[in-house]
Image (tube, rainbow, N blue to C red; front, side, top):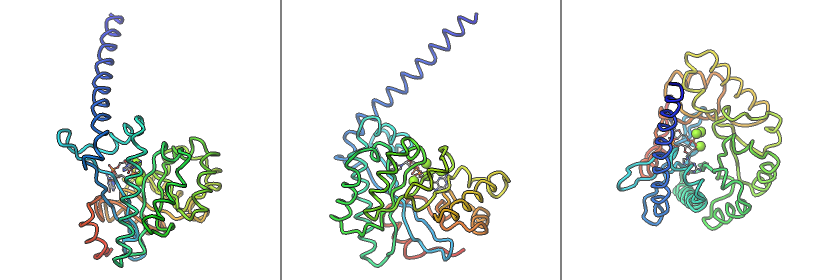
Length: 280
Ligand code: C2E
Ligand code: MG
Ligand code: MG
Ligand code: MG
């Protein structure tokens, strides 16, 4: 009987695996054409200063609208893009689009505005990355300090020595870096002081329940004081309620990002937010 269950379990497992790899294959094939077929779009989500409610930055978030598959989440297709190497061309396109957009907004008088772009591990490990970044910035005419590269803790901790070298290189070129999803990726705190990072992004999983959960309160307040001690800025991700905002303000968090202010939106809608700012 145990044997039979085992076999059923095995059959179920392979069916699920087959379904998943069929979907993956479908996504890889479709993703190959996504750029040339104009299916990719960069959305922007405001980053808001705690001090005065001004929009002081934007995070570029990739969107993929496929004619048959519909809107595919980056959480699903970014790993597929990484596995197939497509992330290099797609990532370069995102960088170029976001940098160009930042330059446009600054020229239109909305500056200073920091443009935050997510980098995948595959991009970060590519030896030409620092060169590519500065080439894009210089070609588009954006001062280097207006770009902020978001790296997840996982990327940073994968090969800390290599990461330190690339960070030093980018830092010398005047480009800022932040650690995304901070608190979820087993950072070794001793590396944090060697990393040339500018900002910690407190992961939304800690922010979600800060109004009610004493442990999340403790974690968030510890991250903020750690950052202060190290001379780093903090931004809280996933801020959705006034209660969360109140706690973050009390703890001295510098910036916020979340649905309380806006979802990621296309260019035209972001411009309306830039003009308006927020009152809280
Ligand atoms: P991330 O960089 O941590 O981005 C934050 C995610 O949280 C975004 O999901 C954003 O839409 C969502 N979010 C923002 N505010 C709130 C909120 O108040 N509540 C909730 N529940 N969610 C909120 P999104 O756009 O689906 O992106 C998911 C992940 O995909 C990103 O996480 C990032 O890791 C990756 N990604 C997105 N665009 C790119 C890209 O251009 N390049 C790379 N390498 N990765 C990207
Ligand atoms: Mg991010
Ligand atoms: Mg994040
Ligand atoms: Mg994330």
